Structure formats: structure tokens, C-alpha cells
Length: 262
Image (tube, rainbow, N blue to C red; front, top):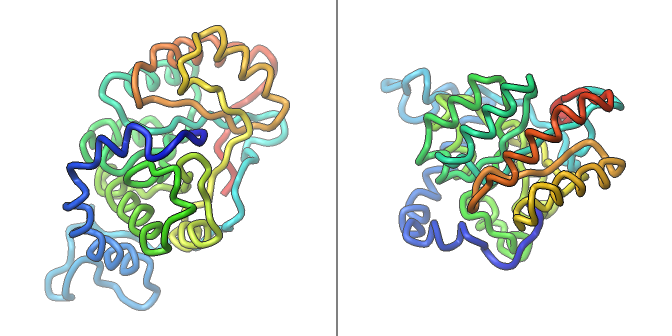
């Protein structure tokens, strides 16, 4: 999502879970590093007690740390990206609109949200969409925090999303509010998650009205192919209605739909 002040609504949502996150941080970092190790085969325990297949992490090749904006669909393709979910009310509605229009999207998920709604994460994966790590706390001041904090936010969310999906790892990392740092980009890329930006902010997070969201996307589309929407953080009925209008319009204009480059 575009940068908003402070931690935003997720700061309040996860405050009660901070103690749990802190205790889990060291374990999550070890788990993520073990999953990426080129030398070992065990992932979550000694060789005598191998993890269940759905808990194992395949080795992931590092990707570029440069923030991606382009589409793998070519010069006349757009990337639909959906931030801050999954949400039990709005994510199913967004999925339905995408299904109705035959469009695939990239869902940038908050780790605890994914952990709370694994059924929705698996629906996203089953429909052919891609996953993106959007951190644990949605802290838009991450770029001002320590490297240890950034690592915990990124790697804990990666673990939570991967577990919720049944073993499908996020392919991208989007910093809350675009609060990337060289360290966070390099860390995410080393775990196979391409840093993901956006070209068009639909401003749907502000709930300006469906017509305003549609007009913003049409006006800003010349800036590039990656469009930012949200499926959580409050009432997203305007987003659902805007997608219902925009997706057919984009097709009428000759656009196709792709995923962000990796």
C-alpha cells in the first residue's frame, strides 16, 4: 500500500501479539535460513526427525534486489496487485471479480492475516494467483528501523504465509508504504522474493468513492503497469466495485494481464 502515517491499522491489530512475535523471531529466522541453505537437507529438526513434506521449504534461487515494476506479460500488460489481506469479507469478493474476468493477480499479504485465514491463502493459490510478503506489522516506518527488526518483519511473514499456503512461498516482497532499504531488498531477494513496487496507486485505501478510484487508475495508467489495490484495512466495497468496472475496461483497451517480473 502507499505510505500512510505510522504503523497504521495493523499496528493496533498486532499489538497484542507482539510478545508472541518476539519469542518466535529467533526461531523464524533460523527456519528461513535453514530453508535457504545450500548445504543442509534438514529443515525443522534433526535428520532423524524430518519435517512433514508440507512444512519443508525447497531451496529458492536468489532474485534481483532491484524493485520490480514491469510486467512479464509484455509492453501492453498490466499487473493487478492486492495488498493487506487476506480478509474474510473482502478477499473472497475480490477473488470472485478476478475469476469472473479471467484475471490473475498478486496478493501482498500480512503474515498474521495469512496465519489467521489459511483457507483464503489456499484459495488464492488454487486460483493461480501469486503471493507476496507484506511483513508482519505493516510498519510504514520500517526504513527507519534496525536491520534485525526488518529481518524479523520480513522473514516471520514469509514463514507465516508459506505455512498458511501449505508450502507455497511468496515470490515477492512489498515494503509497507514503499519503505524499502538496501538491506531489506537484498534480504528478500536472497530468499527468492523480488522487491515489488507500483506505478499506479488507485488511492482505494482512502475510500474516495468507486468513480474516483476508477478515474485515478485510468488517469495514472500511463505511469506503468503495476496497479495497487487493497482487500483489507476496512470497508473495501469501493475497491470491489472499481475492479468490476476496470477489468473489462482494461480488456477493451487492449490490455492483457501479467505478473510482476521476477
